[in-house]
Length: 160
Image 1 (cartoon, rainbow, N blue to C red):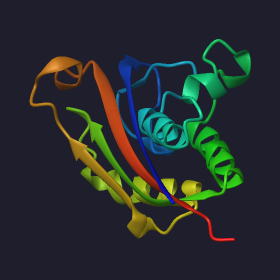
Image 2: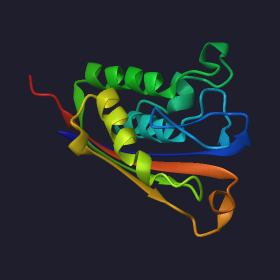
Image 3: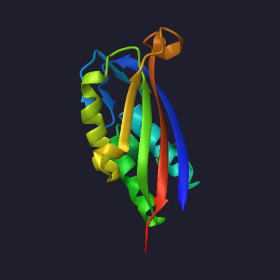
């Protein structure tokens, strides 16, 4: 049996914050604002995984008003969700993601991001796709005010 899930997230860019995408720190003068480390890519993937099994969303598992998740490492939260998925009898078959950011240019970091995510979700790197797009100057991403991410995941039931 297969299950498909989608996820989306957006965070504002602010000075004096680190920029972390897919668990990889990206050198840039701004970072994403949020209660956790605001890793927008991990958040979108987390929602896709949870959505595939109708198990809520990131906020229902890791509320932003809970001090336990202040500055939390989102790649670790994602790994906790992978354990939930495994406990429900499923595994990730493949993952396709898109990050929308006018700047910084992400091309040089894509392979490291893919590897980081693949290790976290316990699949070979060739099952993880990460694409970087600009928004052609349109909207908050295009104006350099925010970064967004989308994810689609295919889960497969584990064989007994």
